[in-house]
Image 1 (cartoon, one colour):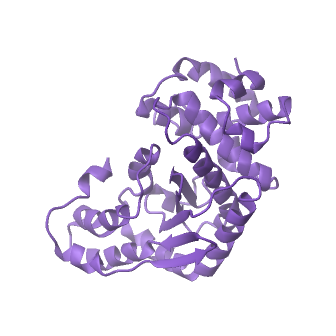
Image 2 (image 1 turned 90 degrees about the horizontal axis):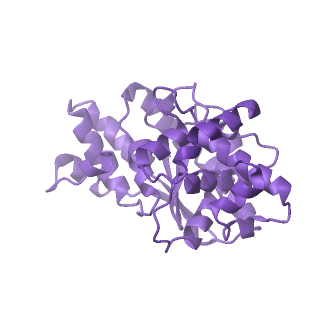
Length: 306
């Protein structure tokens, strides 16, 4: 994982270049939005004169950014996914520049979404880290709508944005609400000692999307409908034997898809949303605050997925 490569002994030229860089911070009602795209700008300047592309990325982007990333039980998925090395820097400069231009819009959308999210749950003093997309997400063909996000712990969310994909601004509020709920879940379960299994991850993702849909019910998140309804039961039968598996590779494959398409892209995310929606339909009195106290098997039983 890339996190293993970032700690380099001594002060290098690249480190000196980033040492005094201070990210822009927008504060609102005890929360913070921290814009980290300046590290990518420094990196882009360096790679025009230095051919050691990977090393510069480690030193000028990964190392300083990871000083901001608070480690948590789900943060192991962050490193390889959200901060992987760009395949081609040619696509990165316009993304970074547009991200700077869109500061005010991002601040407004995030602060409004945090306010809306706090009407039903409660979590304050959240830090949201903003970075540009820097990997295959720079294409216009992927279903994330120009956004990627993860709640690393109860008080931190990382959101990567590709402003060149038009849907990002219409989906950002939904994404914030989704990850906000997951920070609440992480707070409630931060002292759990049993490693989460695949079923826990599936329901964790399903709860996040269900909460976001609870607030923004006009938004149709493509990852929560990546499989047609007719295929969901079949996908459940395929992965049922793995639901108590705690292996990272299996969890990631079921949730996000495998290269051989044995597990479909976003299949586990769609399944989690479906389980939650069917459980809520069966028992509409189960409000978001109560979800936090229920075991995954509770929702599984009410959903009809057996």
